[in-house]
Image (cartoon, rainbow over all chains, first blue to last red; front, side, top):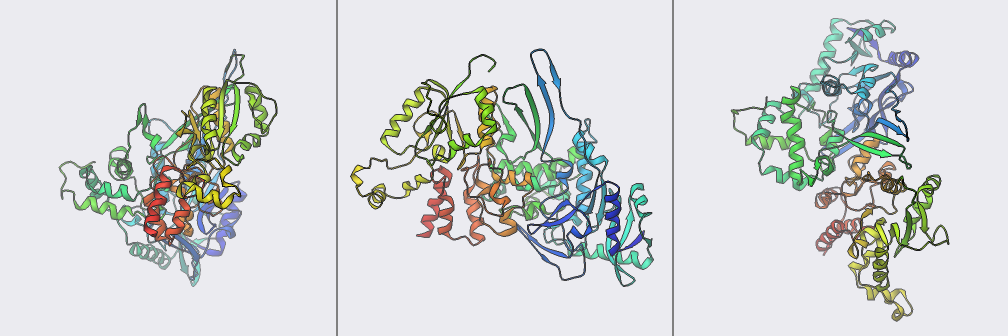
Length: 375
Length: 262
């Protein structure tokens, strides 16, 4: 493990930009921290505090001398790997030819800085979905292959965070090239850096780092421990899965229906929700046809439209699908819970629905030991 | 569309501001392309030339507000193969549907020197209340790209890509943070049909509901939330009573707040 004095993080940014990477990091835009292209470290959100609660988000200047005193806002890394809209294919036909004019999938080399443990976990989950199944998605692959992940371990989790109980944070343990913890080393603000890959190690060789002392390492452990202690919300993934499996006809779905607006925000801000729809379009003359992939959601009626109508007609059935998939059948499908505990669905639900509280209702009425769990 | 026949298009106007049919003129470059595939047979805003019906497509703007309108829309339906209602007036009665919440006589007396000359209906209603409508294009005004999409889909015999989900989906796809969550703005986005590209939230304003109710509008849940954000009952009435005041979901929700306010 290494120590990089905080002021030299700019050197890391310059190094990456010099190597042709597009630098993506947290940036304050319109009062909300979002991942955006950075021309240098000075554009990165620093010393900002965020207040988050169900259906509530505000940012303000932080008082402490801590750069990463916040967690990101509504946008996760998802759009950078699974874009909201992308071209799948373009075909052109004439009287005697039929041509595939789909442009090859390419993506710029991108380095992501300030990525949190929950985001890294979500990215690993997306890898499973888009790369590790029988069919790899070319769009995702192109974006993922060139990507460098420079994680930051959280020191100031939001009130909506519950990564500790999902065992995805607040410290990143795997899936990064470098992981930084903001500490004070020899009286100076610094980052303790952990190497996660050869690419990360190679970058360290170009930076003014020194070996971390035992005291530095202790300081970093303390940052992560304190962060974990600040996290108040929790979900027990096993109990949640059991509660949902036993509660398919639970009356609480009706309560949720009465509060949910069917707006789909929870699924769109979720860093692991991956559902999409296909849209076919034509040129006016009809010579060219295109197929586009767009983000979709299980809260949209057309999402389950088959001839004759939509399968999930009630708000209760749509809510059950989202919660049931994420916390129950995801285990069977991908071997883990679909939730990484980032809390976005809580903060960015305009109705202020808090899934940690809702899941507790199902857990409470589930049998203590399930005869059949979803695993 | 591969046959030699160019479909004939007519544009009709009822009680409206003309904004929606101007969207067709706003297509500019694309309009020339459209004119290559469609014959603009009747479009007084664009040309005085008039080709007699029947028409393959009729775009109908505006709401039905007079006995004369009631008669005219029947005639238009009879000479139209496909009838597409365009804009908030044609699909929900428009801003003029506010008359439904008051007595028309009172309005007429205040506005006109000779109320006896005015022949108007009690209600301003959508085209679909009078004749069979084949497709409704929402918006105040409509979005020109949605209009082009509908014409394009017709020419190519495919389903138009006109979503019925809410504005929030467009906000999230374009990366606009929720104005309700991050600013406490009153926003109709969660209950309003997409189509504008989430224009207002991109400028940090709440959605005004120009495209009318979305597929599953849960207006009650939104009102609960707006109340928590400090929106008064009076302001909620005004929120739901604008360009789509006559749309059932918005009309009903606005009435619920009238009851509470009293």
